[in-house]
Amino acid sequence: MNHNRIYKPNQTTYEQASGLLAAGELVSFPTETVYGIGADASNGEAVAKIYAAKNRPDFNPLIVHVSDRDSASNYALMNDLAKRLADAFWPGPFTMVLPRKKKCGISSLVTAGLETIAIRVPKNDVAHALISTFNGPVAAPSANKSGKISPTTAHHVEEEFGGELQMIIDGGPCEKGIESTIVAITDNHVTLLRPGSITADDIKKIVGKKINISEIIPPQINAPGQMASHYAPNTKMRLNVSNPQPGECLLAFGDIDNTTDTFNLNLSRSGNLNEAAANLFSMMRKLDAMGFSTIAVSPIPETGLGVAINDRLRRAAAPKE
Ligand code: TXA
Ligand code: MG
Image (tube, rainbow, N blue to C red; front, top):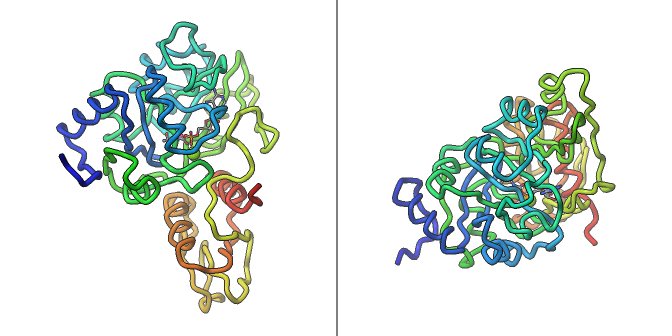
C-alpha cells in the first residue's frame, strides 16, 4: 500500500484511479482550471462521499466531466446552439447547463434533483487520460471544503483533505487557475452564471447577434452555490486598495512601487490578467497562512478575465454568515 497519497500521472496511476472510481471511491485530479475531487457520476453513494468530504450543502449540484462532445450528448440534450458552443470551447474551461436526458444514468444527487445537468470537457492531459481510462462520466467539484479557496496544486488538495482521500494525481499547477465559465443554454438564449476565462465577448463572437446573452449578478441566481461568500480565506479581505494600512498585507497587481513597505505578493507585476488568474488562489492561500489582520487587494481592471478575477475576489471578501 502506498502511503503517499500524491501520485505521478502515468498509465499505472490512471488505471488505479479508474479502479478506485469504479469501486465508488474519490480521486482528486487536475484540470486546466482548478483541481477537482471526482466520483463516478452514475454512482449515488460515491457522489454522496463528495458532498460529505466537502461539507457541501446537498442542494448544490456538481459538474459532470466527460471526454468529448459525443459523450456529453449521452447525458444532456444538445441543441444547435449548445453544439456550436461545444465545438468552439471544448475541450476547455467552459461548462454548459443543459436539459438532462431523462434516463441518462447520472445520479440525481449530481444534479440535485434538477431537470438540468452541468457538463464540461476539460482541456488537461491528465484529466483527459483519467476520464478516458475510466470510460464514464466523472462528477467533480473543486477539491476544497465548501466555501473555501479552490486548489490549484496537488499540495493544496492535500492541505484541504489530509488523510480523507486515497489518491491525488499531481499534474502540476493549473494553467488557468480560475474555475470554468458556466452558462445556461435554452433555445436561443445564453445566461452567464459564473464568469471565467471564456468571457461574454468570446461567447458573443461564436453565437452572433441573434442570440441574447444575459449576465446574472449574484446573489439573485437560481444556480445553487452562487451564494455571496465563497472562495474565502479565513483572513478578512479589503478590495480596491491603493494605500494599505499598517498590519495589512497586499495582494498586489501591476507596478506597486509606492507601497513597497507593505509585505506583498504580486499577482502580475506586468499587469497580465492571465498570469494574475493563475496566481490568484495560491497567493490568497499563502497570505491567509501568514497571520495578517487583513489582506488588502490592489484594484484589478474589470475587463476580460478581470471580470472573473473580481467576481472571485468579491465573494472572498463578502461577509460570512
Ligand atoms: O472549473 C471548474 O468548473 C471546476 C473543475 C474541477 O472542473 N469545478 C467547479 O465545480 O468549479 P464546483 O462544484 O466548485 O462549481 C460548480 C458550480 C456550482 O456553483 C453549481 O451550483 C453549478 O456549478 N451548477 C452545477 N450544476 C448546475 C445546474 N444544473 N444548474 C445550475 N448551476 C449548476
Ligand atoms: Mg467550487
